[in-house]
Amino acid sequence: MEAIQYKTEVFEGPLDLLLHLISKHKVSINDVVITELIDQYIEYIRQMQLENMDIASEFLEMAARLVYIKTVSLLPVYDEGEKLQDELRGELSEYADCQLMAGKLSKIANGFDLLPTPPEKIEADMTYTRVHAPEELLKAYVSAIGKGGRKLPPPVEAFTKIVASRIVSVGSRVSAILHSLTIGQKRGFSEFFMASVSRSEMVATFLALLSLVKSKQIYIDGEKDTATVELIAEGDNE
Image 1 (tube, helix red, strand yellow):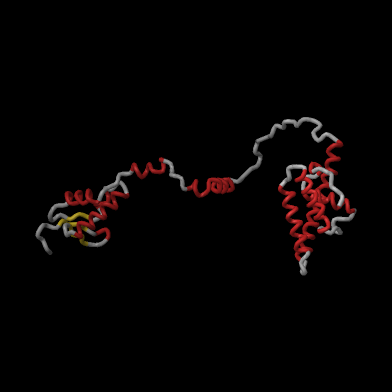
Image 2: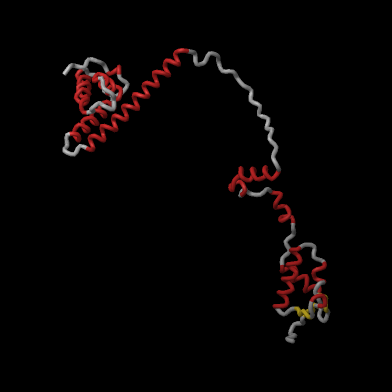
């Protein structure tokens, strides 16, 4: 076999080397028998080792791949070997197309200056000219802040009415009602709510009246507007 004298610097990778070997056979990629290239490829790798040249791992990987293809091709049932050869032919065909296109682009790029003048600075107009309906803006805002934003603590102002309002206790209203009643005196049920200045005080007054009825300290008689409240004397079981 003729000794191979070329250097690895000529080839960019194992596919580049295989294309060179195919060109020496003067056949197309689709017609080449891959197994016929294996011995030449291995000889090239061996020559590299004898000259103490750095061998890229991809060249060794392709060598192992070619040896495997040759091995399975020698088996009685060589369908796998033929399939592997077809796959490698496809890769070589794609690589050859890329090389051809790269060559054409290189010639085009060498024919003229890609950047004849330096890039010009363009002042961007950041003025927003679109017009949106209020509903569209609200929807966009809610979508932008997301669920996490909507769960943020409310502002302090939101608590002003709650904190500023006086909370009236039921106990204080019980004491006030008892002090306003005397034995034998009847007062209208609605009178106890007229002086209430807040909802809290009205609720506390109502709960206080119920508590006094339950503890049998007062007696409520009548219905609606005619209902009266009377203080029950101690020891009066009636």
